[in-house]
Length: 357
Image (spheres, rainbow, N blue to C red):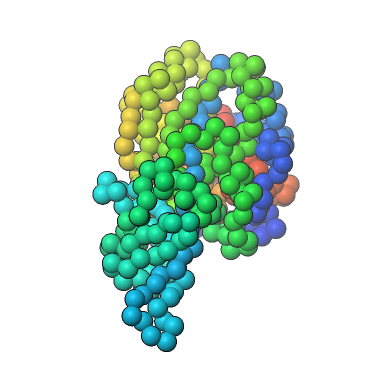
């Protein structure tokens, strides 16, 4: 299986740079078995069945993109200052942040970067093109300062078109975000607002909340020509005893478990032991789902439309089949669906769920 098997041509005009408003007004391509139907996200109330369980990722995106200045003592000719852009990646057990810093070559180990509002960081290490930063503030003091100076870490294909602004702090966050730690949003969940959640609950749709902190690696391109040679980035997640019990009960009742977003799907498949059994789980997952994978828990998936040659496109191809996904994406392009993080959604239900026996 080659990377080129997951390529397609996407008109640039279909790349969304802002979401629709209200959130639930986005379009929804409902693909169940061989049927492909054009709907809206609000139609989920009529599409889903009572007893279906939606699995939602309650991670909270931090304003991880920072713009600062490196001050070098003793420099002459005005060369003591350099503008540095930092994107936080993950918090380490050493109470440091790994980050991308540009240009990293302009910061030496031991030097400080000032970000404003009393927030600064010292570069303590460089490795694999990344930086290890120790900030002068911790805990709530760090969170408050970051909220003032940080920008939402929009995906590269949006950031290349416009800078993040205050509106993105609302738009690029789910309404049920609780546990801080992501540097990218679980974007399928961005389509849900309070009214839709209430309407679904009244219909008898059930909800389970899990946490997977989405890393910047979700945007990294696949470089291996053979799909099986690709190494996934690692992300940290948690499935609580309550969540695992709810999912298990739904399966035992013969109802469907439908994760909202590829992050929620990857997490519950990581925590799965065998068909219909899922255990409480915490840790790091680098699960790579591509065609040939046998699903243990997920009956379907609600997700946005993904990048060509991406691991996310490989995941939906594993669920629906490569030929079917090509049909779905061709339809979406012909019907001018909006793509990627701020785009429209799809509900994917295979005709015969691809699960292990």
